[in-house]
Image 1: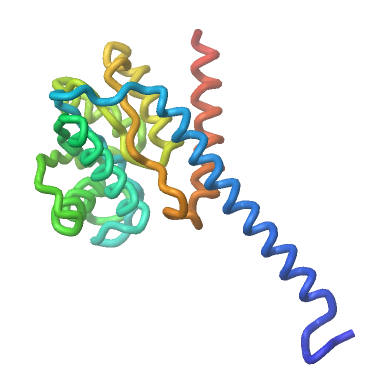
Image 2 (image 1 turned 60 degrees about the vertical axis):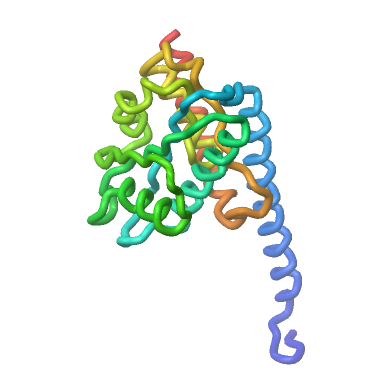
Length: 213
């Protein structure tokens, strides 16, 4: 039966979809918030110290930083500003190759950080990585001279990068600090996706780790 041109049951379907969408968005926020709280157990940058903030690039087809890379760049800047508040200094390292486009992700990140976010500090570029494992491996020569290291990305991705660093260079594990990667309502629409992907990949990472113990 139709009423005013609307098929019967449409209102119920719309309501169900709205509830499902709201549930997914709430879950995404909750997961990222929980990961950020867990990362708070990591130490803060000490006053007077020098640190490296590694921005992990995301696949970018355009010649401009896409929304996810801009998000990660903002996280890097927030983390650097937070370090400055306690008297530490930060160098930002942009990492990522030309995986999906013609310009390395690291170059796009650096351009956005310097030109749009007006960062006046040091920025280094690692333009060859095509995976998170390579991101970590390729920045090791750049970060080992710093007293602390943070990974700028969504919280689950940053957690995976910290696991990779601990595997590749166990001696640097104690230098890891958390990035300022969570804001309520920031990139809410994509948080459920990154939460689902991040949880799946972290489980795989820890499964492999348990098998090798």
